[in-house]
Amino acid sequence: MLKMKSIDDFDYSGKTVLLRVDINSPIDKKTKRIVNHNRIQKSIPTIRKILDQKARLAIIAHQGDTLDYQNLIPMTEHAHQLSIFLGEEVHYIDDVAGPAAQERIKSLQPGQALLLGNLRYLGEEISTFEDAVKLRPEEMLDTYLVRGLAPIIDYYVNDAFAAAHRNAPSMVAFQEIKPTAAGDLMLNEVTALNELMVSPDHPCVFVLGGAKISDAFGMMRRILESGTADSVLSCGITGEIMLLAKGIALGATKERFIKDRGLEVFIPEALTFLQNYPDQIFFPADLAYSEGGTRREVSARDLPLDEMFMDIGPETAKKYAAVISQAKTVFINGPPGAYEDQLFEKGTRAVLDAIASCSGYTVIGGGDTVTAATRFVDLDDINYVCTAGGAMVRFISGMTLPLIQAMEKAYLRDQGIS
Image (tube, rainbow, N blue to C red; front, side):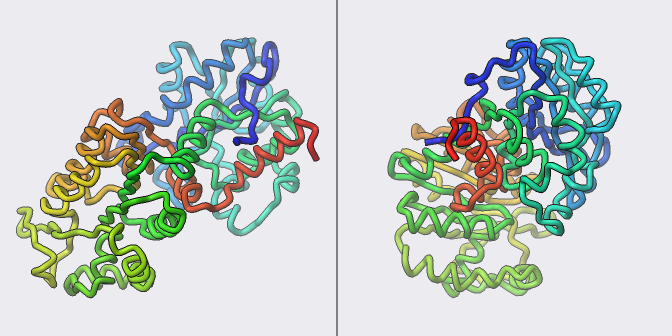
């Protein structure tokens, strides 16, 4: 059971509500404009529900980070897009918690919304600060953000599950001192992922691809040991590591790529998975590469080949689609290939087409996966599209998330349970 209060548990009429959302969006490198509005659109139901209670709503969010500096921009366009999806103006001020922001919040009228400036302009909100200065939530009450905003708000709502793995003041501190609720998106995300892990209909298939193989291996460990997954379809770098664990040499170019990034350390664990779950783990039967700008494909039986493989081949795509078609539950994180390049989009398109056509319950998650799905299929054909990436991976891997801890602590306090 979820130990969180919902926004339906409070009366916000005439009150000032601080809402933390995650509308961190992919940005075009050249124009600095938002290229995918999925997270912005998903935040609207919670915003609408709070405003309908005639609350004064202050919204906080982030865009980019020090490790993602090219996306660290003001949030003017975010406010504009929120206004479009909401059907009424969401005001904006390029200040996070200073005197100007405080005065704008105090001047809000019931039913008005204000988006504050980019949280990541505050040193205490960036990931490098989190890594270097490990504060407990109660210690964060002295941070600039909390000191600036806590005295002028009545309630705190968190609807930012996509940032649930971040131990930052905006995510875990206000729960210490303010009545707290989870937004609708937050509750939907946690409920969908919890059901996926605890009670999926079988056969349950996980498709694990992309380049972040530490994420894939973390999830694989839990879903195989717990019996959640009946089949794991490995692709991307994860699939290539499985081939190496099987003793199939890829070729000098790709093996050097893997070793240069220290990814060969996953080969022993991959071998253990293959030995312990021989009938549950699938790996590529063929791979695709470029030869003079033309797509070429090679069977795993004909490896090694000194090429940089960028996609699964047609035999693999067909086999994976057949497994997906028989599934009652399907989850995918990570595209099977470098779908951004038209030359290598076939594998990702084929797998996503199979998932969209599947009659079972389907869930997709992760930024690249959602972006690919937006390009290749109708998202309405997917049962649940998770806005989270890192938080989703950690949740499925069984790791404790700072936001979940903070929400549960506030729930117990508000219930009078010490």
